[in-house]
Image (tube, rainbow, N blue to C red):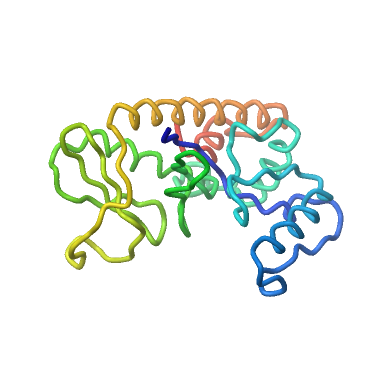
Length: 220
């Protein structure tokens, strides 16, 4: 069954109160060995880290407990420009975005510069009416999708724009009804994530808590 999961990117080292150095991939060429060493080290950190797959820093927002989220939000607050709350970019949303999985296989995950605000791009998939390929921004590299007869087809990753793309091939298909149900679920999860952030900010007596929670979570 194809499912959509809303994730944020977490480096557990960022939230530790102790001095640790996570193992680098270059030090462990074997991915299995690196992952075991990584999780062994990460398990000693303050933040509980449960990645969606081996070697990833993407974490399901539904699996972040309250204590960990407080630490994540507190760290994010260091990036806030409190002297310019009226500006849209005074705090950016969390890196990450939607992951598409089938069984245990990750089919799509956010790329570099992808963030929670990209939920808007996924909503446009359902709004589209034409059957041609259309880009969907998930960071770079990005992907393309097309819709036909109740089926949504997704391409593999690419950095080519629409004018440069030739002979795009379908990586996988999903029924539009399944995609819509999955998208509604992650939107609900993202709104709940925003409300959890808002409660944390209010407990911290942070000014403009509502606005900051919307920016951080990428949704209103």
